[in-house]
Image (cartoon, rainbow, N blue to C red):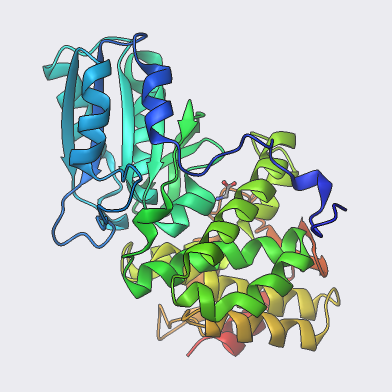
Length: 374
Ligand code: GLY
């Protein structure tokens, strides 16, 4: 432990910076002749929220283009429809159409400017265009800054399952500008807090204590609180991904709440609940499963449920099938990427700050779903 109470295993290098867009552009300049800014429609997409102001470069589209332009021969922009419902082949193909129609070569750099959907699709396009071109993540939502932009997971959805088609492909840089968080709509903020909260029970109870103590400040978009949340989340994520980039084992703990959450997203139809909302509720369900498996006590589950509720997230799951709700959840979860031979694998809490992956009897899973859904 360091004097500041942080676990040394999770520390990022001292030169880790959260706001670094100008340097990024300069570092990449000269090595490429074209760049693309891939972003979402300004309306009605809620993720396209930026504030221009202060002394810092704010990565909205115009600002990013202006910063990039002197360093590249050509800059083009592709505007994509945003939201989980559009994270599909059709939207992905818009990127390829644009790249090819502009004659982009292997030196092209893609910049993903937006939330998790834009980042995941841009990354997948970068991984596959001409068998791989560099890309930079410029995440503008809390969720994408604390989770999806870091670690190299890229994907699109399939109607039958979330993130089913994709690749591990690392961005050359992730640029988080905290100014973009000051105008996030409340739903997006809460969705991002879900992934922040996740890091506590799986890896760092001191961070969970801190989140509980600062949840009101986070909900009020206090810049210092948000900065700490982003930095600490990235530290923990980097520590996990650094040991298991391709999710052979440890990295799966980052999916705490996601098995139930992905079933909610696919069951309701992508985009009805935000990813972070589904994960928030999914963490309550996964904690309930951990309780039934004898790994945590009821007080731990109650504590987590209370915090998730205070973050403005749903703590009860939706009914996705009135006739056989639990069966429908289970059907979706059998398609989860962690499932082996049709056996669902859940991320469970082994004890405060420690997670693992295991199976559970169907009857127990049904019991959890029945107890947790409205
Ligand atoms: N979002 C989970 C992971 O990156 O592994």
